[in-house]
Image 1 (cartoon, rainbow, N blue to C red):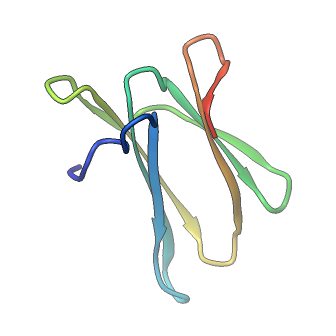
Image 2 (cartoon, helix red, strand yellow):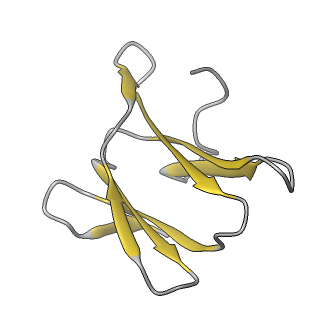
Length: 88
Protein backbone atom coordinates (compact mmCIF):
# COMPACT_ATOMS: atom_id res chain seq x y z
CA UNK A 1 0.00 0.00 0.00
CA UNK A 2 1.23 3.43 -0.81
CA UNK A 3 0.18 6.93 -0.08
CA UNK A 4 1.04 9.74 2.27
CA UNK A 5 1.52 9.26 6.01
CA UNK A 6 -1.06 10.77 8.36
CA UNK A 7 -1.29 14.54 8.27
CA UNK A 8 0.95 16.42 10.74
CA UNK A 9 -0.35 16.06 14.28
CA UNK A 10 -2.60 13.13 13.31
CA UNK A 11 -2.25 9.38 13.82
CA UNK A 12 -4.78 8.27 11.23
CA UNK A 13 -5.42 8.96 7.55
CA UNK A 14 -8.39 6.98 6.18
CA UNK A 15 -10.62 6.98 3.14
CA UNK A 16 -13.40 4.97 1.58
CA UNK A 17 -14.01 4.37 -2.11
CA UNK A 18 -16.14 2.24 -4.37
CA UNK A 19 -19.13 2.40 -6.63
CA UNK A 20 -22.80 1.64 -6.15
CA UNK A 21 -22.52 -1.86 -7.63
CA UNK A 22 -19.29 -3.15 -6.15
CA UNK A 23 -17.58 -3.29 -2.81
CA UNK A 24 -16.76 -0.34 -0.58
CA UNK A 25 -13.02 -0.17 0.14
CA UNK A 26 -11.90 1.17 3.49
CA UNK A 27 -8.20 1.96 3.73
CA UNK A 28 -6.22 3.62 6.50
CA UNK A 29 -2.60 4.58 7.00
CA UNK A 30 -1.69 5.12 10.62
CA UNK A 31 1.19 5.92 12.92
CA UNK A 32 2.69 2.95 14.80
CA UNK A 33 0.70 4.06 17.87
CA UNK A 34 -2.44 2.66 16.20
CA UNK A 35 -2.41 -1.12 16.68
CA UNK A 36 -6.08 -1.85 15.91
CA UNK A 37 -8.96 -0.09 14.22
CA UNK A 38 -12.54 -0.20 15.49
CA UNK A 39 -15.04 0.04 12.65
CA UNK A 40 -18.65 0.86 13.55
CA UNK A 41 -21.41 0.18 11.04
CA UNK A 42 -24.83 1.86 10.82
CA UNK A 43 -26.41 -1.45 11.84
CA UNK A 44 -24.69 -1.15 15.24
CA UNK A 45 -22.20 -3.91 14.42
CA UNK A 46 -18.64 -3.26 15.59
CA UNK A 47 -15.65 -4.90 13.93
CA UNK A 48 -12.01 -4.69 14.96
CA UNK A 49 -9.32 -4.70 12.32
CA UNK A 50 -5.69 -5.74 12.69
CA UNK A 51 -2.99 -4.22 10.46
CA UNK A 52 -2.96 -5.64 6.94
CA UNK A 53 0.68 -4.57 6.62
CA UNK A 54 3.41 -2.31 7.94
CA UNK A 55 6.15 -0.12 6.54
CA UNK A 56 8.65 0.12 9.36
CA UNK A 57 11.02 2.32 7.35
CA UNK A 58 8.27 4.98 7.06
CA UNK A 59 6.69 4.25 10.46
CA UNK A 60 3.28 3.28 9.07
CA UNK A 61 0.64 0.63 9.70
CA UNK A 62 -1.95 -0.15 7.03
CA UNK A 63 -5.53 -1.30 7.58
CA UNK A 64 -8.01 -2.46 4.94
CA UNK A 65 -11.56 -3.81 4.76
CA UNK A 66 -14.15 -4.54 2.08
CA UNK A 67 -17.87 -4.06 2.68
CA UNK A 68 -20.94 -4.41 0.47
CA UNK A 69 -21.93 -0.99 -0.84
CA UNK A 70 -25.25 -1.28 1.02
CA UNK A 71 -23.46 -1.35 4.40
CA UNK A 72 -22.87 2.10 5.88
CA UNK A 73 -19.77 2.91 7.88
CA UNK A 74 -20.38 5.33 10.76
CA UNK A 75 -16.92 5.59 12.31
CA UNK A 76 -13.32 4.42 12.33
CA UNK A 77 -11.38 4.68 15.58
CA UNK A 78 -7.68 4.04 16.07
CA UNK A 79 -6.79 2.06 19.19
CA UNK A 80 -3.43 1.52 20.89
CA UNK A 81 -2.10 -1.81 22.16
CA UNK A 82 -4.17 -1.45 25.37
CA UNK A 83 -7.41 -0.70 23.50
CA UNK A 84 -7.34 3.00 24.38
CA UNK A 85 -8.49 5.49 21.74
CA UNK A 86 -5.61 7.10 19.88
CA UNK A 87 -7.74 8.93 17.32
CA UNK A 88 -11.26 8.81 15.93
